[in-house]
Length: 461
Image (cartoon, rainbow, N blue to C red; front, side, top):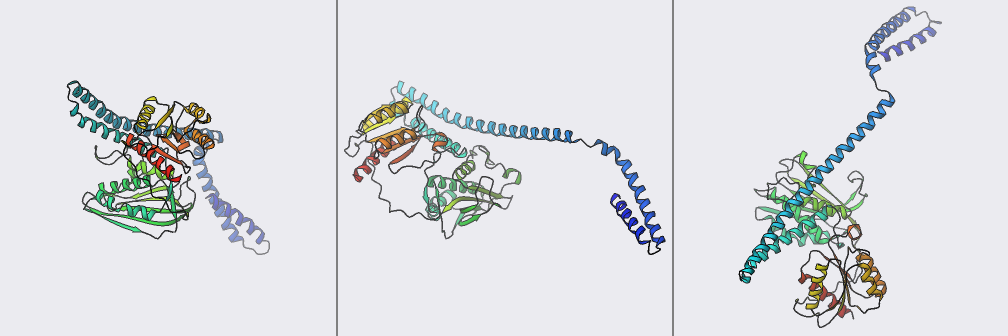
């Protein structure tokens, strides 16, 4: 009405001018009458709306309201974060208490059997401890993957070759009721990532797909080269060339309200006891740590499609890899070489186990309990054949110690041991003579690494 009133007022003024030359007084009167009616209607409407206008907040009131809204949103985000943290810690406590129960109970059985003089009857509790340790190791690795703090060992990977190499394992995992369809596209690009973690991510997706198809179905894995723009990327993703690995199933699907929670640790839609809730969170953490992204689309009754995008690059030319040296058993010496090894580990029990294993295979060891002590030995000019160092050391990290050792002994082989070393070891860029052994490891694995290192060094000489 107000707009009509303004329009009629303007028309009246124009007619006032026009009637100076043409006597259109009748039309002028009609327009003025309409203007009066519109003004009265507008005035009435404004009068009835006046209380609402007076109730509108001032600029200062709006500013305070916006500040209160932002504070409320922050409190809500904090409450959601604390809820997720509570769910996370509760899940960790539950799973690790189960692991500890197996270990503690098995140790009690072993103690009783030894006290009764039946030392030959401890095989079963020892095997239970071994399985529980493997379970704990898997849990910690998955948590580090979700937190994007796991130690990755990236190298150039050909996606088609990796997926094709998993075909037999995937078919065994899926079972006879589920058909596996591999559609491997032609790739111009390669990816740089930890191949073992990529295999683990694809296996987790395949297991979730299998569980979503209890009556059988089809699992399809497709690879393709993609160029992503800002339309598909999240704020942390740089647009560019990517390799896409898509895993699609014909299962029951996921409802929209649950789809946003699938990456939360310890969240699972499976019945109790049939899933840890860490599989997809591990996939998410690995892909994000590798510079990529993962997307999941699903609807009830329409199956699920998961897509992994990893940064792509052109193939890097490299010389043919040499055959890996054969690994001898722990009972044999280091290929006849009594190597002198510097062991730097701050936890005494772990250091004692490492030193004992190295002594058994015929090596001479020098021990250091922290980084500065190890650095003194390196700078003393002591001849060394191998440096074994934990990454997370007090005073001087294992990475810094390795750099100092390379400066003093350029050809010295280095074996870094790590469980979690923070951001400094998320993705280790290893020198040619440097290798990594992840905690927890068996003593046989340690001996095999050391023996392989000495054999490789002997071949190079």
